[in-house]
Length: 352
Image (cartoon, rainbow, N blue to C red; front, side, top):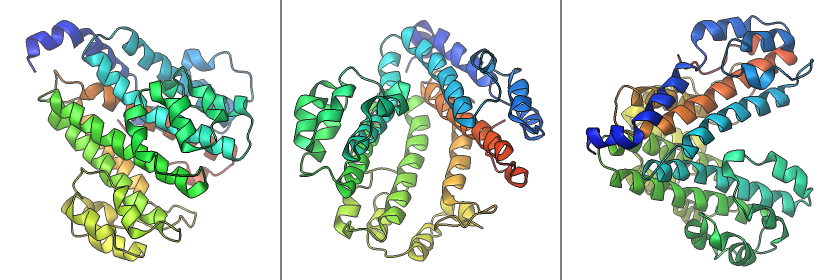
């Protein structure tokens, strides 16, 4: 990628997103948040952050669900500003980022319809970045074939969904298979697209997406224990990329318990260090550190590192992921305050 031309069509937006990054909550601000005794105190402290304008009209006492929704509104507003001012190829890169949210929305609507949930309630729970025009019609589909032919054939997910058409019924197991098959296809496609953009975007996004692929591989393996999913079907759900591809994935497809998973992961230097003191099974409460928590920490570091270079698209993806982590942190602090669990309040993933 030519740096001169990059500034011509993406320099302004890169400056904007780096400004967004500078607005992320810092360690001293997190310290102030953890000292709050009530939700009103927390709202007052957040008045000095980028969330101020989104919280100022909320009545007291503010619930944690409202806080989460308003923080998400702030993220969506900033991301949509980037989209509205983007031209090719950066607009296509931003569109790719939204496809993951579209997949989650599709699965949410399918699952909710299966359990006869109200359509309007389901649509309200969908992530705003994952909306597309025909999405409300998902609630009337009864088979995977109907879902594709009547709703998704004209959506950005059509290419990913073709691999799921072999599923006959929309039951619990098949829905999880569809979710992971869609994310696998999306991740591989996004990775290939990033490679086509050239350096330094290709190498920066490669590290980030490989970590995401490895995280999904481990989660699919652990979550398949105790289900009817066969080992062969489990292997088909693994993304064909990442540090675990193909050797570790082949071995993980054959394991039967979390101890065997841990034994395989410890043979890889990049994961051996993050396994220390980690619970791979279900959390037993208290201050347990899960592998998911460690993956979040590693992801934060990769996304922070992407801002150390210039003239690449990775900063847009990294800012969004850091912002999402920040929202998880704020909601965690809020939950601890509202539930009077101050002993756990510092169990968040610090960013800066």
